[in-house]
Image (tube, rainbow, N blue to C red; front, top):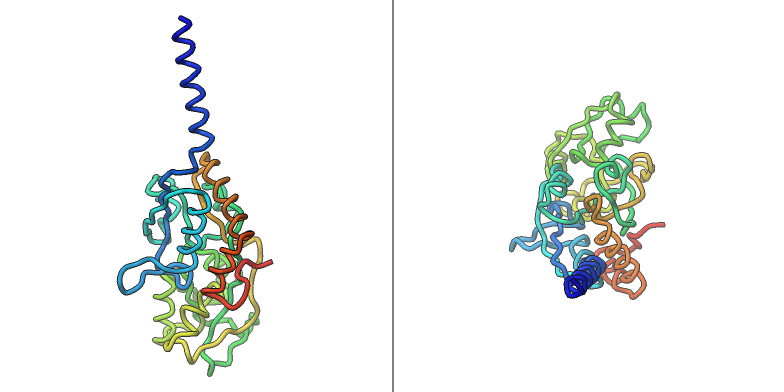
Length: 259
């Protein structure tokens, strides 16, 4: 009996130790879209690139976790997480109250506004009178789409697309009057390209917390608190040791972390 109790105590201690350290040394599957430059995209050789990808790799290294990436269409991102296709989402996902009902989030790792883009020759302003009857393109199932539908859906023709790139293409084809999306995505992925050279921002940046949340965070399944805490600790570490700034400067000439 005494021998049995000793074995039982050893097992309990071992399991407790494993639970406390499960975040370190594990292989963590990261879900991302791969179609949202400059944050995440697939290059011509099929390699995942972008700010999200570099941040994910830095966080995994800081947390002593081996990480692999899984690509997933945006609309299915949270369902695939809940189905355990991967363990965390690092794909420029805004921390919103609606999403918090289904998943848990880390602290933010960046925050940028959303804006409208128009053709430079079009006389369009962001007043209700000017926007009335205009056609705007948004990416489906995004906070930008929610904002447009809730605030302008009754006066504008809102067209939704599976990816931002598809919306950009319809803009250059003349099917849209406006685009609405994250300002950095529009700048880096459209305005700074040859296709977007005749287009420009119009109006202010939008950051309303009701729609755009608390910034961009990492989503994990409810109950995976050790993983969430490990990522939070790693975010603090790379912000402190300069790794975050190095990645930031690789992509942007401003502080993408935000206020």
